[in-house]
Image (cartoon, rainbow, N blue to C red; front, top):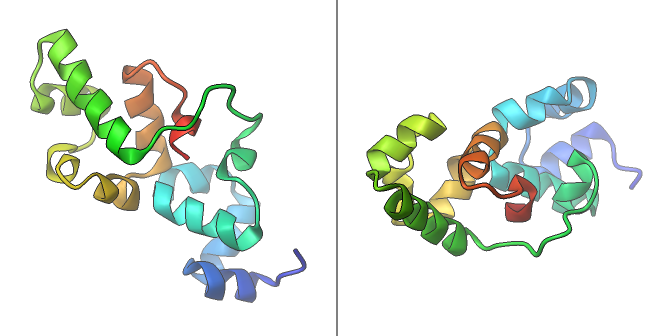
Length: 127
């Protein structure tokens, strides 16, 4: 888009140094940035978030509300508590699940990947 790292940083809310690191260290994107931050960065760059992570997803996207329902359904189908499911995922879901928008604001991409692995779905559908 012809934007400088400073312009990308200003428009996305990602620090200038972080924009440079994302370019040089792509794994940082999955480990240190939330789903919401990646979505905002992609809006600034005028690309779909799935474009950052390979091919398009063949299945339709899902909303964060549907993701929360799937988490509850998965717990019921396994006969486990949300706390036990959190241990499998390696991240505290219970403080976020009642306000699903908080999931995307605080969940790092790497956690989303692990969560969706447990849910047996392509994590990119959430992007």
